[in-house]
Image (tube, rainbow, N blue to C red; front, top):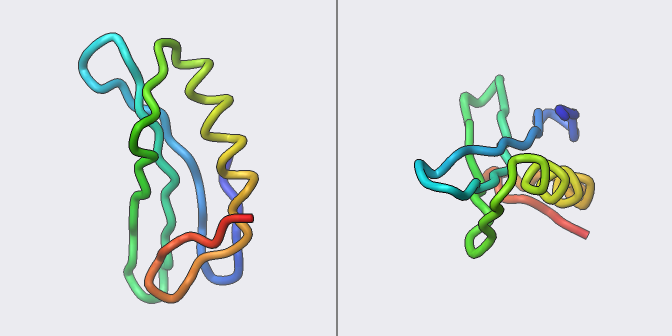
Length: 75
């Protein structure tokens, strides 16, 4: 899922860590300023891709904005 918050594009990803688990991230991009930043959710590992996808989409729903430096505002 991708969405726009102000001038920022925000989306999530699920990546295999090379083993039996998956890690998740929320990405932000500001086209005009050339900023792309990944926010990996540390401490969360998932054994199934579907589980990881549900988790990160819930986290993405909680993002209410992006600060000037690309950090997230979360409710």
